[in-house]
Length: 283
Image (cartoon, rainbow, N blue to C red; front, side):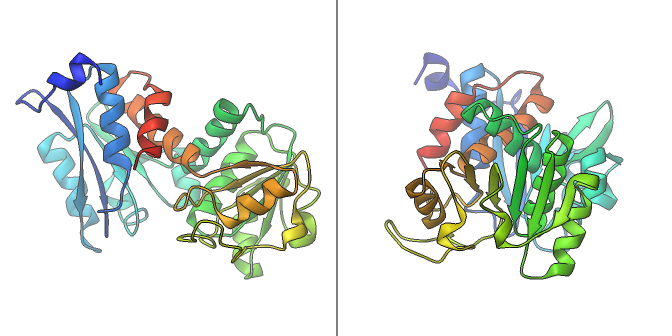
Protein backbone atom coordinates (compact mmCIF):
# COMPACT_ATOMS: atom_id res chain seq x y z
CA UNK A 1 0.00 0.00 0.00
CA UNK A 2 1.42 3.41 -0.94
CA UNK A 3 1.70 6.32 1.49
CA UNK A 4 -1.28 8.13 0.01
CA UNK A 5 -3.51 5.08 0.39
CA UNK A 6 -2.34 4.59 3.96
CA UNK A 7 -3.07 8.21 4.87
CA UNK A 8 -6.33 8.66 2.99
CA UNK A 9 -9.60 9.05 4.84
CA UNK A 10 -12.86 10.68 3.69
CA UNK A 11 -13.26 14.39 4.34
CA UNK A 12 -15.68 17.18 3.51
CA UNK A 13 -14.00 17.57 0.13
CA UNK A 14 -14.34 13.89 -0.81
CA UNK A 15 -16.28 13.21 -4.01
CA UNK A 16 -18.76 10.36 -3.75
CA UNK A 17 -19.57 7.72 -6.37
CA UNK A 18 -22.11 4.97 -5.83
CA UNK A 19 -23.56 1.74 -7.13
CA UNK A 20 -27.25 0.90 -6.78
CA UNK A 21 -28.94 -2.48 -7.00
CA UNK A 22 -31.17 -4.89 -5.10
CA UNK A 23 -29.49 -6.81 -3.63
CA UNK A 24 -26.14 -5.06 -3.88
CA UNK A 25 -24.10 -6.37 -0.94
CA UNK A 26 -22.18 -8.71 -3.27
CA UNK A 27 -21.01 -5.91 -5.61
CA UNK A 28 -17.27 -5.69 -6.26
CA UNK A 29 -17.59 -2.18 -7.69
CA UNK A 30 -16.70 -0.27 -4.49
CA UNK A 31 -13.53 -2.33 -4.00
CA UNK A 32 -12.45 -1.86 -7.63
CA UNK A 33 -13.24 1.84 -7.66
CA UNK A 34 -11.57 2.64 -4.36
CA UNK A 35 -8.41 0.76 -5.38
CA UNK A 36 -8.27 2.87 -8.55
CA UNK A 37 -9.01 6.12 -6.70
CA UNK A 38 -6.24 5.49 -4.17
CA UNK A 39 -3.72 4.53 -6.86
CA UNK A 40 -4.46 7.77 -8.72
CA UNK A 41 -4.35 9.91 -5.56
CA UNK A 42 -7.97 10.98 -6.05
CA UNK A 43 -10.12 12.22 -3.18
CA UNK A 44 -13.04 10.01 -4.23
CA UNK A 45 -14.75 6.99 -2.73
CA UNK A 46 -17.56 4.64 -3.76
CA UNK A 47 -20.38 3.20 -1.66
CA UNK A 48 -23.14 0.68 -2.41
CA UNK A 49 -26.80 1.56 -1.85
CA UNK A 50 -29.45 -1.14 -1.74
CA UNK A 51 -32.34 0.51 -3.58
CA UNK A 52 -35.67 -1.30 -3.56
CA UNK A 53 -37.26 -2.19 -6.89
CA UNK A 54 -39.45 0.70 -8.02
CA UNK A 55 -37.26 3.39 -6.41
CA UNK A 56 -34.73 3.87 -9.21
CA UNK A 57 -36.01 7.33 -10.18
CA UNK A 58 -35.68 8.51 -6.58
CA UNK A 59 -32.10 7.24 -6.53
CA UNK A 60 -31.27 9.27 -9.65
CA UNK A 61 -32.91 12.31 -8.05
CA UNK A 62 -30.60 11.81 -5.06
CA UNK A 63 -27.60 11.92 -7.41
CA UNK A 64 -28.71 15.38 -8.47
CA UNK A 65 -29.47 16.63 -4.96
CA UNK A 66 -26.33 15.24 -3.33
CA UNK A 67 -23.96 15.96 -6.20
CA UNK A 68 -22.83 12.34 -6.45
CA UNK A 69 -20.02 12.23 -9.00
CA UNK A 70 -21.04 9.06 -10.80
CA UNK A 71 -23.41 6.13 -10.47
CA UNK A 72 -23.17 2.48 -11.46
CA UNK A 73 -26.44 0.64 -11.91
CA UNK A 74 -27.10 -3.07 -11.54
CA UNK A 75 -30.20 -5.25 -11.45
CA UNK A 76 -33.10 -4.62 -11.24
CA UNK A 77 -32.69 -0.92 -12.12
CA UNK A 78 -30.97 -0.90 -15.53
CA UNK A 79 -34.13 -0.03 -17.43
CA UNK A 80 -35.96 1.75 -14.64
CA UNK A 81 -33.41 4.60 -14.36
CA UNK A 82 -33.84 5.65 -17.99
CA UNK A 83 -36.88 7.86 -17.49
CA UNK A 84 -35.05 9.89 -14.84
CA UNK A 85 -32.06 10.74 -17.06
CA UNK A 86 -31.49 13.67 -19.41
CA UNK A 87 -30.08 11.60 -22.29
CA UNK A 88 -28.67 8.23 -23.31
CA UNK A 89 -25.68 7.18 -25.39
CA UNK A 90 -26.51 5.30 -28.61
CA UNK A 91 -25.59 1.96 -27.00
CA UNK A 92 -27.83 2.54 -23.98
CA UNK A 93 -30.63 3.69 -26.28
CA UNK A 94 -30.33 0.62 -28.51
CA UNK A 95 -30.18 -1.77 -25.56
CA UNK A 96 -32.81 -0.09 -23.41
CA UNK A 97 -30.56 -0.53 -20.40
CA UNK A 98 -28.14 1.63 -18.42
CA UNK A 99 -25.35 0.41 -16.16
CA UNK A 100 -23.45 3.68 -15.67
CA UNK A 101 -24.50 7.31 -15.26
CA UNK A 102 -22.21 10.30 -15.62
CA UNK A 103 -22.43 14.08 -15.59
CA UNK A 104 -22.04 16.01 -18.84
CA UNK A 105 -22.24 19.61 -17.77
CA UNK A 106 -25.35 19.79 -15.60
CA UNK A 107 -27.05 16.82 -17.28
CA UNK A 108 -27.05 13.13 -16.35
CA UNK A 109 -26.26 10.77 -19.21
CA UNK A 110 -26.91 7.02 -19.20
CA UNK A 111 -24.35 4.61 -20.65
CA UNK A 112 -24.17 0.87 -21.22
CA UNK A 113 -20.55 -0.24 -20.83
CA UNK A 114 -20.80 -4.04 -20.41
CA UNK A 115 -20.13 -4.98 -24.02
CA UNK A 116 -17.63 -2.16 -24.44
CA UNK A 117 -15.84 -3.49 -21.37
CA UNK A 118 -15.65 -6.99 -22.86
CA UNK A 119 -14.17 -5.74 -26.12
CA UNK A 120 -11.64 -3.63 -24.18
CA UNK A 121 -10.67 -6.56 -21.98
CA UNK A 122 -10.11 -8.83 -24.97
CA UNK A 123 -7.89 -6.23 -26.61
CA UNK A 124 -5.96 -5.10 -23.52
CA UNK A 125 -5.69 -8.34 -21.52
CA UNK A 126 -5.55 -11.00 -24.24
CA UNK A 127 -4.39 -9.05 -27.32
CA UNK A 128 -7.48 -10.24 -29.20
CA UNK A 129 -8.88 -7.92 -31.88
CA UNK A 130 -12.60 -8.43 -32.54
CA UNK A 131 -12.65 -6.80 -35.99
CA UNK A 132 -13.02 -9.40 -38.73
CA UNK A 133 -13.62 -12.28 -36.28
CA UNK A 134 -16.52 -14.73 -36.24
CA UNK A 135 -18.19 -14.57 -32.84
CA UNK A 136 -20.78 -16.72 -31.09
CA UNK A 137 -22.72 -15.60 -28.02
CA UNK A 138 -24.49 -18.03 -25.71
CA UNK A 139 -27.57 -16.40 -24.17
CA UNK A 140 -29.93 -13.57 -25.06
CA UNK A 141 -30.41 -11.71 -21.77
CA UNK A 142 -29.21 -8.23 -20.87
CA UNK A 143 -25.50 -9.05 -20.73
CA UNK A 144 -25.70 -11.03 -23.97
CA UNK A 145 -27.45 -8.19 -25.81
CA UNK A 146 -24.82 -5.69 -24.67
CA UNK A 147 -22.06 -8.03 -25.88
CA UNK A 148 -23.77 -8.67 -29.23
CA UNK A 149 -24.12 -4.93 -29.87
CA UNK A 150 -20.51 -4.18 -28.86
CA UNK A 151 -19.04 -7.00 -30.97
CA UNK A 152 -20.81 -5.67 -34.04
CA UNK A 153 -19.71 -2.11 -33.27
CA UNK A 154 -16.12 -3.40 -32.99
CA UNK A 155 -16.29 -4.87 -36.49
CA UNK A 156 -16.97 -8.57 -35.95
CA UNK A 157 -17.63 -10.26 -39.28
CA UNK A 158 -20.36 -12.44 -37.77
CA UNK A 159 -22.23 -12.51 -34.46
CA UNK A 160 -24.21 -15.71 -33.96
CA UNK A 161 -26.66 -15.77 -31.03
CA UNK A 162 -27.47 -19.16 -29.50
CA UNK A 163 -30.34 -19.37 -27.04
CA UNK A 164 -32.96 -21.87 -25.97
CA UNK A 165 -35.72 -19.44 -26.97
CA UNK A 166 -35.35 -18.57 -30.68
CA UNK A 167 -37.52 -15.46 -30.36
CA UNK A 168 -35.21 -13.94 -27.75
CA UNK A 169 -32.19 -14.92 -29.83
CA UNK A 170 -33.68 -13.06 -32.80
CA UNK A 171 -34.14 -9.89 -30.75
CA UNK A 172 -30.50 -10.06 -29.61
CA UNK A 173 -29.14 -10.88 -33.07
CA UNK A 174 -30.83 -7.82 -34.58
CA UNK A 175 -28.61 -5.65 -32.39
CA UNK A 176 -25.65 -6.76 -34.51
CA UNK A 177 -27.25 -5.54 -37.72
CA UNK A 178 -26.13 -7.35 -40.90
CA UNK A 179 -23.50 -9.32 -38.94
CA UNK A 180 -26.07 -10.89 -36.62
CA UNK A 181 -27.99 -14.12 -37.00
CA UNK A 182 -29.57 -16.81 -34.86
CA UNK A 183 -27.59 -20.03 -34.63
CA UNK A 184 -27.23 -23.26 -32.70
CA UNK A 185 -24.51 -25.26 -30.97
CA UNK A 186 -23.24 -26.53 -34.33
CA UNK A 187 -21.96 -22.99 -34.98
CA UNK A 188 -19.65 -23.00 -31.95
CA UNK A 189 -16.63 -24.93 -33.33
CA UNK A 190 -16.29 -22.59 -36.32
CA UNK A 191 -16.39 -19.40 -34.24
CA UNK A 192 -13.14 -17.56 -33.49
CA UNK A 193 -14.51 -16.07 -30.26
CA UNK A 194 -17.16 -17.72 -28.06
CA UNK A 195 -18.77 -15.80 -25.19
CA UNK A 196 -20.94 -17.43 -22.54
CA UNK A 197 -23.39 -14.76 -21.40
CA UNK A 198 -25.66 -17.17 -19.53
CA UNK A 199 -25.54 -17.83 -15.77
CA UNK A 200 -24.80 -21.54 -16.27
CA UNK A 201 -21.78 -22.44 -14.15
CA UNK A 202 -22.30 -19.70 -11.56
CA UNK A 203 -21.47 -20.96 -8.08
CA UNK A 204 -19.84 -24.17 -9.31
CA UNK A 205 -17.27 -25.78 -7.06
CA UNK A 206 -13.60 -26.31 -7.88
CA UNK A 207 -13.27 -29.22 -10.29
CA UNK A 208 -17.01 -29.40 -10.85
CA UNK A 209 -17.66 -31.16 -14.16
CA UNK A 210 -20.96 -29.42 -14.88
CA UNK A 211 -23.29 -28.00 -15.80
CA UNK A 212 -22.26 -26.56 -19.16
CA UNK A 213 -24.22 -24.21 -21.44
CA UNK A 214 -23.15 -26.20 -24.53
CA UNK A 215 -21.66 -29.59 -25.49
CA UNK A 216 -18.10 -30.39 -24.37
CA UNK A 217 -16.90 -30.83 -27.95
CA UNK A 218 -17.84 -27.26 -28.92
CA UNK A 219 -14.29 -25.91 -28.62
CA UNK A 220 -11.04 -26.23 -30.53
CA UNK A 221 -7.44 -25.11 -30.46
CA UNK A 222 -7.01 -21.48 -31.46
CA UNK A 223 -10.39 -20.29 -30.23
CA UNK A 224 -10.90 -17.64 -27.58
CA UNK A 225 -13.58 -18.69 -25.07
CA UNK A 226 -14.90 -16.14 -22.57
CA UNK A 227 -17.19 -16.87 -19.65
CA UNK A 228 -18.83 -13.75 -18.21
CA UNK A 229 -19.49 -15.69 -15.00
CA UNK A 230 -16.78 -14.80 -12.46
CA UNK A 231 -18.01 -16.62 -9.37
CA UNK A 232 -16.10 -18.94 -9.57
CA UNK A 233 -13.38 -17.29 -11.62
CA UNK A 234 -12.57 -20.57 -13.38
CA UNK A 235 -15.87 -22.13 -14.42
CA UNK A 236 -16.51 -25.65 -15.72
CA UNK A 237 -16.90 -24.14 -19.19
CA UNK A 238 -13.44 -22.56 -19.08
CA UNK A 239 -11.90 -25.80 -17.82
CA UNK A 240 -13.41 -27.74 -20.74
CA UNK A 241 -12.41 -25.05 -23.25
CA UNK A 242 -8.79 -25.03 -22.00
CA UNK A 243 -8.67 -28.83 -22.11
CA UNK A 244 -9.66 -28.62 -25.78
CA UNK A 245 -6.83 -26.18 -26.52
CA UNK A 246 -8.80 -22.93 -26.52
CA UNK A 247 -7.61 -19.74 -24.85
CA UNK A 248 -9.89 -19.44 -21.80
CA UNK A 249 -10.76 -15.95 -20.52
CA UNK A 250 -12.61 -15.39 -17.23
CA UNK A 251 -15.26 -12.76 -16.58
CA UNK A 252 -13.21 -10.52 -14.30
CA UNK A 253 -11.68 -8.75 -17.30
CA UNK A 254 -15.04 -7.40 -18.45
CA UNK A 255 -15.90 -6.43 -14.87
CA UNK A 256 -12.67 -4.45 -14.52
CA UNK A 257 -12.81 -2.75 -17.91
CA UNK A 258 -16.47 -1.73 -17.77
CA UNK A 259 -15.75 -0.17 -14.37
CA UNK A 260 -12.64 1.54 -15.71
CA UNK A 261 -14.65 3.13 -18.52
CA UNK A 262 -16.99 4.67 -15.94
CA UNK A 263 -14.20 5.87 -13.67
CA UNK A 264 -12.45 7.52 -16.61
CA UNK A 265 -15.62 9.41 -17.54
CA UNK A 266 -16.29 10.52 -13.97
CA UNK A 267 -12.81 11.68 -13.02
CA UNK A 268 -11.03 12.44 -16.29
CA UNK A 269 -8.16 10.22 -15.11
CA UNK A 270 -7.10 6.90 -16.63
CA UNK A 271 -7.42 4.31 -13.85
CA UNK A 272 -4.63 1.83 -13.16
CA UNK A 273 -5.96 -1.39 -14.69
CA UNK A 274 -3.37 -3.58 -12.98
CA UNK A 275 -4.46 -2.25 -9.60
CA UNK A 276 -8.09 -2.89 -10.47
CA UNK A 277 -7.33 -6.44 -11.62
CA UNK A 278 -5.54 -7.17 -8.35
CA UNK A 279 -8.48 -5.79 -6.38
CA UNK A 280 -10.95 -7.89 -8.37
CA UNK A 281 -8.98 -11.06 -7.72
CA UNK A 282 -8.49 -10.34 -4.02
CA UNK A 283 -12.19 -10.55 -3.19
